[in-house]
Image (cartoon, rainbow, N blue to C red; front, side, top):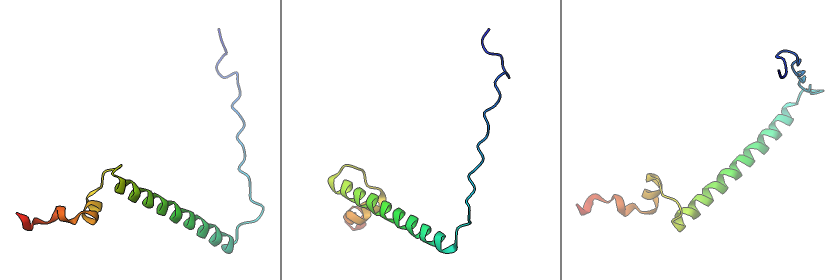
Length: 79
C-alpha cells in the first residue's frame, strides 16, 4: 500500500552558477566597504535604541552601563 520506497528518483542537484569573470580587487574593496558601512550603521542604530530604552527604563542596565550612568551606586566611602 502507498508509494514504494526508491521508486522516486532523487531530485537533480542544481549546479552552482559560475561567475563569468572573477571579481577584481577593486570590486571586492567596494563591496567590503559597503558591508562595513552597513554593519556600522546597524550597530550605531542598535546602540542608540539601547540608550533610549535605558533612559526610559524599558530595559535593565548591565554593570558597565550602571557604572556609566549612576556611579554613585559604586561609592564605598559611605560605608
